[in-house]
Each structure stands twice: as C-alpha cells, then as structure tokens.
Image: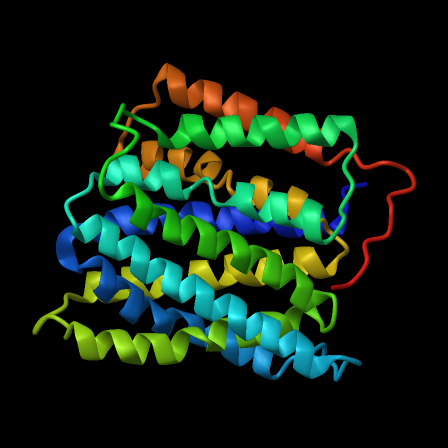
Length: 293
C-alpha cells in the first residue's frame, strides 16, 4: 500500500507539472512580476475551500504553527521576487531555472540536521537519483560558474529551501489544512505590494486571464498537497526532492500540447526520476520518530 505522504507528494508533482507548462503558455503576454501578481487570484478557490474546512482544528500550538506557515509563505514570495529580479537582470533563464530548481537540496539538508530525520540507504540512493533527475530536466547549456548574477540567484534557492523546512515544522503543530490556509494567505499582501511596483498592462486577453488564474490554482493545489504530505508524517528530507521532479509531468505535457520533442537527455531524466520515486517510497519498518522543533 502506498503511504499517504507519497500520494500527496505525487499530487503536488502533478499540479506543479501543469503549473510549469502554464508559465510557458503565458509567454510574453505578462511579465514575471505581473504573472505572480495576477496568479494570486487563482489561490482564491483553494483559500476559500480551506477556510470552511472542518479539519482546521485548534491544535495545542496553533499560534506557533500559524507563525511558521505565514513565515514560509512570505519567504516563498520574497524568493519569487528575487528570482524574477535575476531573470530581469539579463541572466539566461535556461541557466537560472536549473540552479533555483536545486532548492530541495537545502530543505533536505536542513531537515536531516535540524529535525534529525533518518533515512535508510535505499532512500538516500533515491534522493541522489532525484537530484540527478532535476539536473537532467533543467540544465541545458554550460555557463560560467562565477557569473555576476549567481549570488543573487542563490537567494531564492536559500529562501525556498528554508520555506520547505518551515512548512514541515508548521504541520508538526497544526493540521496540514490550516497550515496551507495561512501559507497561501501570505501571498495576498505581497501581490498588493507588487501591483504598486509594476502596474498591469492596459489590456489583457481572455486567454491570458484564464491561463494566469489557472497558474495560481495549480500552484496553490501543489502547495496544499505538499503540506498534507508533511502532515501525513512524511519526512521533509524525502518529500522535497520528490516534489522537485515535476518536470516528469510537464515534459510529456509539452510534447502533447506544444508539440515539443523529447531528446535522450529528457528520456534519461524520466527513467531516473521513476527510479528515484520507487526508491524513496521504500521506508524502514520502524522509522525513527522525529522530534518537534
């Protein structure tokens, strides 16, 4: 039987796989900052559903859990802003994206060190394979290692990685539903701030509106699923690298929807990713309990 945390993580992979394709479909119709701002509208249905959920629960450490969830949301937003800043600075997206896609490594390392999470040898092998797959899916060309934008690009890597850890810690105190609610609510004030910095274009097509709202919806569903995975006693050191395999979904969709071709590199990445998921899902019979922070 598949563990609940793995099912929720795979749902997040599916949601973010669609999200990645939608970003490409929007194209130049909106700037990255405008996409971030308008996509917040797509969070609405998930926020509304969570607000009336019966599983929010008071919890013994409600304030603590909510604080960590909000902090995770804010860090994610700030990471997004830094990410967009790197892209707007002239750095190549084909190089920025693969670097920032390695943020699960930060979450994994922090979870092992701070949460004292333990992994068996097969799971460690699975994590290594997942990182290899993320690299194969994203890195397309060589770039000088010490480019000027590199240090700024490390900001979202660090912030997103820390955010993943805070999401896990939040679910140690409150339900996954309540954590997801406050995590997503943190995006609203950031969107208001962004719209004051970069006004929206005078005209936006119906197609673009549909895509950008769906962009926010799939992003929200992915984060909701991740938080439920954390709440289902899933280890952050395992969930984070698996969640980074969303190109496993977006690449086949790009073939069907956009008519793109899959090269040998992508095929190898798909095979490695499937092996990684299989290895990571093999848990020890008596996993060590993880202490709350």
